[in-house]
Image (cartoon, rainbow, N blue to C red; front, side):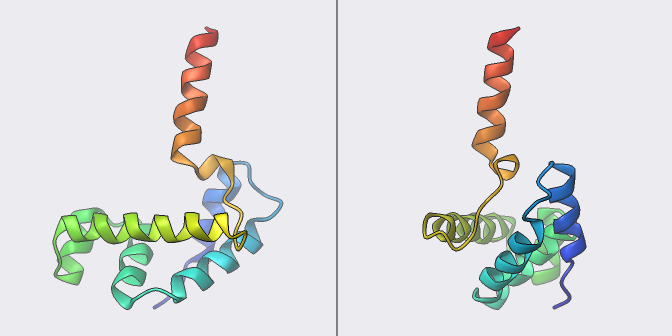
Length: 108
């Protein structure tokens, strides 16, 4: 499967996370390579910008299966972060974005 580290690197650069983006991409790809082919396909197609429905159609699985595989992979990445195999930039944390928005709304 073709990798698109430029897309991932672009997301990291856009989020202001420049210093370690090459390390993140390398470790992310290694973790991804450890997954079943179905999960690798879902994640790669997600990175490539396909919608859940498009991914489901391409892989002949349900939308729920697409979301499940992405959610489980997210868990694998966060477990790798707990094991200090990868450092996830704060800008990529969903909860961090929500908390930051709440703090900014309270400050206004």
